[in-house]
Image (cartoon, rainbow, N blue to C red; front, side, top):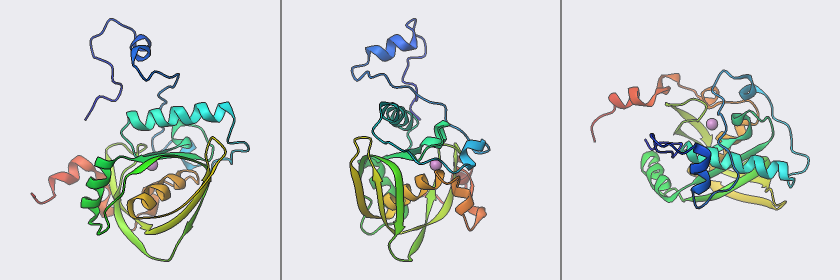
Length: 211
Ligand code: NI
């Protein structure tokens, strides 16, 4: 596991100094991530009246920084203790190919560019659902099999005020459903049908057959 802070362990420089020396320095901050049990994760988050304010842009920048430092594929604002209807997600190419092997997807999982959705609206296309493994930064080290719609249309607004509308499938659709659930106070174990697949990843890996 990569060290998420990125700071050398024995440096006399202050963390702020080290951050400022990084070439991509921008004034963003890593935020604390709420874990299951924190009441903010059970609330229905508030709509954002104006997605284009500097306050929202700063919040989104922190969400992206925090998601990437935690090696997550998505993050919803309530997970950093802000009960607003905002989510970010990004599926890098390496992660996409690993997920398509895990899920046995015939079409494969496509990488997803960094996306910010404010006030997202989801519409399942068709009734078909499938089971797949999910984890969550609010349940560190854990995973479970969760049913999700295979085919999904979603809409939302960006911090630039543009509307995004996409029809997506598979892992992309799964990530958006998982993140949007956070805005309604729903964590993935609440969607599970078979809790025998729920547990700590390192414990479950001990019982997997050798490949
Ligand atoms: Ni989550």
